[in-house]
Structure formats: structure tokens, C-alpha cells
Amino acid sequence: MYMDHQDFPVILLDASGNVTGSKPRKDIDKVHDIFWCSDILIFDTNDQLLLSLIPSGNLYAGLWGATSATILREDESPRDAALRALKKELNIEDGEIEEIGEEFFVYDDGVKRKKTVFTCQYTNLLTANPDDITEIRGWSRAELAKAIEETPEIFAPTFRGIW
Image (tube, rainbow, N blue to C red):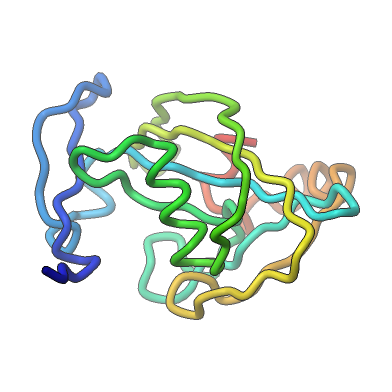
């Protein structure tokens, strides 16, 4: 049986990061609800970090964020969510990911998220799903550090938190 992406129940958390229940993704309030995300940072063959420009209709539209990210579904592990996001957002079915950490964040705008962050070294051409990613850009570590220091407002708080 086919279930639309927006109908899948996603994990809800309390302010301490404990699971409290779930609700369909389409009913999530991305400002007030607290949920768990998997973010994937992809590095290319030149060791540049590929960031995605978040499309309109999303909480941090027009800002640079993790290469790929998703909300965990009920009964889904952070790793499985990350692999699902890579396939849906970037058409990557053969990516090898490595978990680098997990943390509960409270951003300056009051938004709260639990994040499990993964890295992926990927050598093939990326094909972005335009529903999820407006543009992809590679950043060297030095260029990214300078941009975050000089113009932090062009980066989503969710990315600045994991950076």
C-alpha cells in the first residue's frame, strides 16, 4: 500500500528531547513542534562541503543548509532516515554514511530540534530533487568559515548549529 510522504507519522519530542508521540508530517508545525532530524553533510572529491539552498515553502527558505536532511518517521532509525533522504532528495542509492554525532539544539529563533548528523563522501554527479533543494554549492572549509563569520544570516540556524 502506497503512503504519501506527508502522511507518514513523524516522531515528536518534548523540550528535553524525549519521545512523546507522533503525528503525520503534514500536521507538523515546524516552528513549535519539536522533532528529530537526520542531516547529511556531503563532501565531494575536492573535499568541499556541498550545501543546499533551501527551497520556498520551507522554514528556512532561501538559506544554505545541510546537503540533505529529513524528519525521522515513527519506527525509523536516524541512519535509515538519512539513507531515505539521500535517495529522495539527491537520487543517491549507493552512498556510504558515517554518523558524526547527535545533539539537541535550541536555536536563537526558539526552534528546537534533535539532530543526528552524518557525513558522506560522494564522487558522482548529484541530481537534486527541486522539491527539496533549490541549488547545491561546494564550499571549502576556509571559505565556509569566513562566510559564516561575515554573513551568518545566509545560513540556516540548523546548519550553523551543526557547524
